[in-house]
Picture 1 (spheres, rainbow, N blue to C red):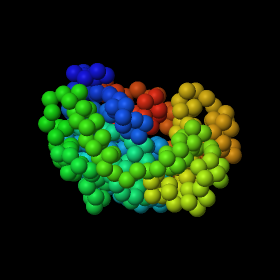
Picture 2: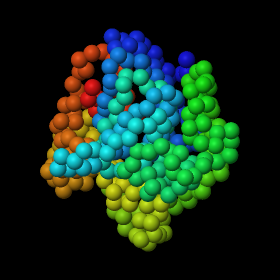
Picture 3: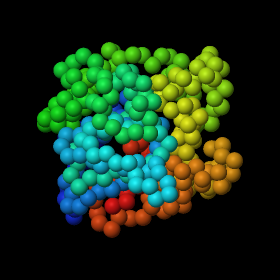
Picture 4: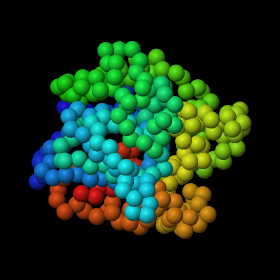
Length: 308
């Protein structure tokens, strides 16, 4: 079993989770690997909220159903059922669900690294959950000429360590062959992350030597959403972290740059589908049956809410 791997049986069945850091040559663009294997006796449903990363789920077996909570007024959410899923940056939450059986590796990428790996403009992926092989592009050279081929190869290996090593190799090849995001794009994104989404667009443009129009164009192509929208995601990510640590809504709103507590609550509702109080209470509610840990996509970050 790989370092960082845990396996357990529970009243619902069994679960296995393996965590790993990508090879140093891939960082900081490739953030993390998380291997998952669930064999549970009931369906599983989770609310996933927007985060400042692109998510690639490389599935081995059964599909996961993802419903985007984008509509209003009683509109049915848009849903897809996929084995491997690429989820770009966005400002709306989704519901992920499966029948209790799930196996694969979840990869978190900085958006500029996803631009290089997949060689496509990331506005094609923004606020979407899709099969990465439908983008009309092929990853770089190597034995795996598609994401589906890579996922199948990963699933056939006997250990998480071997799977993570294969991912390191594949991503190194694809990254070397892909279009570079550019140092100024990386720097602009890093500045937005460093300030928790609070840096003004004009300030970031000045820091990297672009006009505001150039910054917005590069973000659309290489990040997926504009700098203002990306700032909203990162600001709310910081707010969720503060609230989870026990800070009050009033203090959180002030520190994170919201006009007031009402502004924070409105943004929270729009981007997670629930109020700050509902989200915090939901994460503290014990599950009625013992099951796998409710792992968040980002380490030590409240990004998910188990619904079932």
